[in-house]
Structures are given as C-alpha cells and as structure tokens.
Length: 116
Length: 113
Image (cartoon, rainbow over the protein chains, first blue to last red):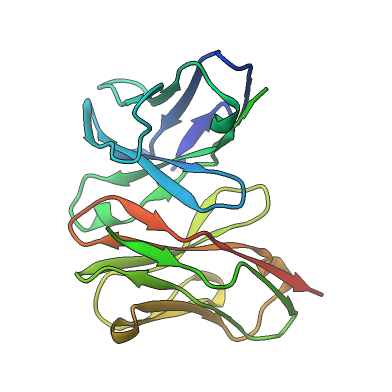
C-alpha cells in the first residue's frame, strides 16, 4: 500500500513565479492536510480539505496561497508570486474518512521549496 | 486554541542512556496526542498515539509515552537509546472533534556511539 506521495520533492522558483505542489493521499484516504515547516520551527497547519471541499483554511496566508482537492487527481497547493519567505518544506498528510481512524494523519515526504 | 511546548530543543545522549523528552500542551478539553519522528532526510513517521484508555502508551522501536492529564503532559521515554534513534521528535496534539493538529517545535536527538 503506497504511502502519501508528494511531488516534486524539491522545487526551485525565482521571486514572482508560481509554485505548484502536489499530494496524492494514501489509497482509501479522502482527507488531506497541508503543513509548512520553516527552518528551526515545527510544522504549522495550513489547510484541511476533503474531496472538492475546503474544511479548514485557518492556517493559510490570506494572499497568494490556495489549495484544492478535486474529485479526481491529487491535491494541489498553489503559491502565486513566490517570495523568499515562502522557502520552506511543505508536508501533506492524509487520513481515512472513517470516524476514529480519521484521527491519525500519515505524512508524505514533503516538498522543499527554495525561492531564489 | 491549543498549543504544544517541547522544552528540550537539542538533546545529546550516549548509546544505552535513557531518554525522556518533555511535551506539554494547553487545551482544556478532550485531546488526542501524538509523537512523530523525522529521521534525517526522511518524512514524519508516527511513533505512538494516545486517544483514550491506558495513559501509558507503547509505540514502535521501544518508545513509550505517558499521558498525565493533571499536568497536561505527554512525555516520550525510551530506556536505552541507540545510535539509530538520532532524529527529530515532534509532539502533537489534536483537540477532540477537530482535525487540525498542532505540533511542537521539535527536539533534535543526537545519540553518540
């Protein structure tokens, strides 16, 4: 059973470009979460999505950041007009849709974004 | 909103030494508690979790954690560490009924052979 997959693993962008980070949840999981890890800091929650719905985006910056989880395909975290401060590791996690089992999140390997 | 404090940012131990990493959280209601480990160059892996029941939780690789509700703590322990335990350890809390997980800032453990 493949785990959570993220691609690319490393992404380099110049200031002002767009960054698209993809996350494919574990098989059978329909809940996706995005976290950001800045250097020397813990993971910070960004957004929680279910298929075609954003459930909680309280951790998302108000501008330039968006996320989606379409009916088909991976979840996408999109950062427009990147700035150097966006350089970080972005982790995706997924959990099942079953109550109780939904309480444990399984993490992907992360995408390390570097903004030049 | 819940928060998590990990007091030790960097711990250095010799092999066979005992380990205890502190974790305190702030939230007045029901919580689910987790310890994750991140080995160098790898992604986060779940070590153990507490939802309810026995407050002493056993996880993988000989780790255990004890939930002490009165102290709002969930400390991680291992009686004898190995060099392969060198990693960063994250405590995390999820308020019951919500999906958002709050992480501590992590503790880097270095085990010297």
